[in-house]
Image (tube, rainbow, N blue to C red; front, side, top):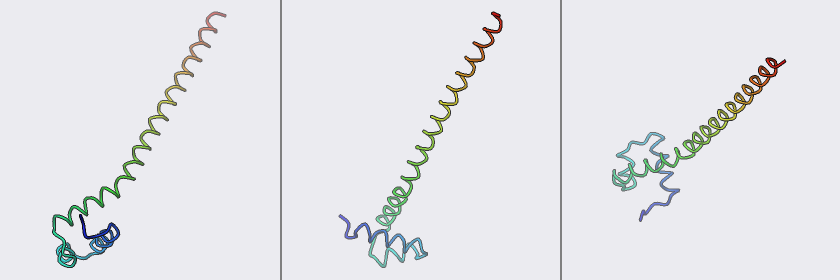
Length: 90
């Protein structure tokens, strides 16, 4: 169990992102390099998840849009074919 709360971890990571050196952070907060790297990975995954979810959503919307366009195209093609057949029968 970590002696740091989620908010404390975020604050430490923010300090790192603002320019404090990796080793200085580890010394200041008495954190192992392995633990701090794990925090960085966890934070990156947490930040990436909403972006990935949005990308998936956009992809699904694009697929749905393409499907609807294909269905519309097929409906027009059938209509044109029907009109051509009616014209030939006249």
